[in-house]
Image (tube, rainbow, N blue to C red; front, side):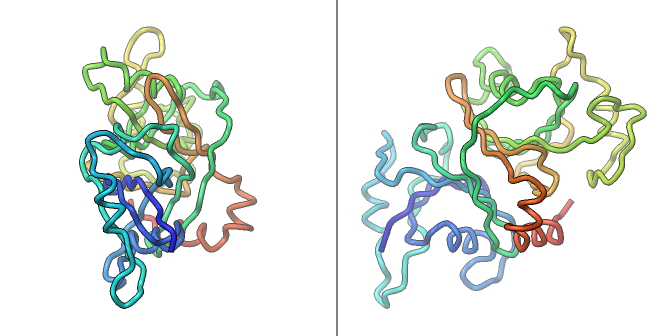
Length: 258
């Protein structure tokens, strides 16, 4: 059987497995006994990679079939500061598992700077999990939070941009429509406190240690980067989600937890 290597964001870990992405996502989301239920976000990683300071060969050797012939679900390499250790060049597809264990796979796409909005909201995914509002578009935001001069600097970050509707341009009077976020008044206040003219560029809107991603509210996609590299994983458009990925989309909508 094949060996796969995954970088899990929820929780952060580097894991060898004999399960392909669809089965591994189901395993992470609901467990082998179906006694758990949580979304899972993980990346495929080049399984031939060696990372200094990590016992890659030891984990590879453990990732073998059980005595009864069943595939080994997980052989952990590391559970600490994993994202910063893995070269971005080794990252492959991004996988989004719902709480029902259904998996949507996203491939890397060509990023174009987003200049159509005055304000953005980002759900940080790894290595931290707050939700942040900002005047910086995604690549600028990545550069800002991974810069060593930033008091809250982190070496690499993975995050998603979230829908704001009318609030992106008019926090005070914009229509809320169907935004599902709790405490809209607090969100309006946070967005209104931003100043693109040399003032406050970012503000934490919701603190948290584990990101509760509202998949169906992701605006354009997911981003992973540092000071040197920037990866973009675009979400399929609405027609594709309702058509080709209909089962995943329905699961994402019905299992959302706010």
